Length: 170
Image (cartoon, rainbow, N blue to C red; front, side):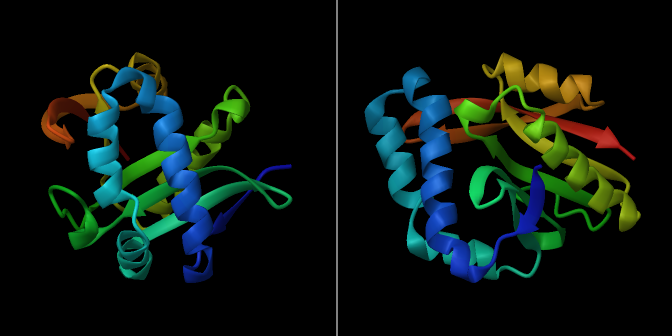
């Protein structure tokens, strides 16, 4: 049985390790190693993780089975959102499930969890960014009612990539 629990400061090392592992698992084979390393050296640091965990408008949640972490989600409110900073919106900044647990509907449970939080707080919409070349994720979000409404640039090392911005009105 999968449960969802909030990550705490004490989880920083585990969250950092799992975040980096899943990021590499899904994107290393599609990108240059130097660009992956350049991004990782900034994004996956203890200092950065603690800053995110200490942000009062950012929250991480783990999908767990007993003590095993299967996936995680990061949601942002207000000024913690990477763009827009709309007080009437929730951003899903990250949602990752380890490859060995794909196909078990864990991503769907995490997504539904975030949407339920947004509805409980009477927000107007949920939004996220997804790499334009990640067709599987784009299809997953479209299947769950998200629509592309814009795009932005994402810098992975020195590689300028495009993320599609998708949202679901509530």
